Length: 172
Image 1 (cartoon, rainbow, N blue to C red):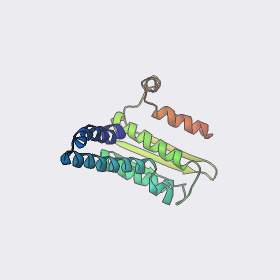
Image 2: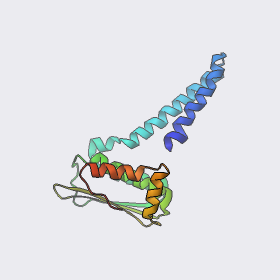
Image 3: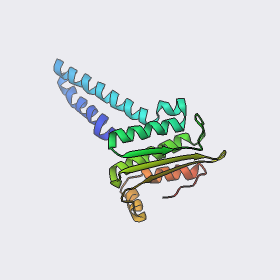
Image 4: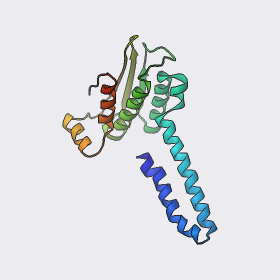
């Protein structure tokens, strides 16, 4: 959505302004440059969100704290992260997958759940990582999940497939 509504729109505007540039318009060149600058910034923001530096630098617990803070600031949700059994700085092979799941499901909560509260619980028992995401929203019926995939909304299904392929368990 952010790529479509943001960066792609600037690229399309720049393409249209290229007709003016071809005719020698200085204003057209300025508009193309502005569109490309805006597009670049939007793409950097999306890439940073998809692969946050804090995840690589400080680990999953810090990255989820940062995600929770960002969600709370943008959405008005009360967001809480509990990670009592997750050592600071711990790195696992599941970090990127768990972060992606938290990001995807948080987006769904913000868009659809009509929730006031979002709660992440991150756990590690020495051999297994767990992430539980709970909100106080309206919920989602199993048939709605199936229909969502048929409608081309693949976020839930994609995360589920990745978790299962990694040998994990996934429940809604």
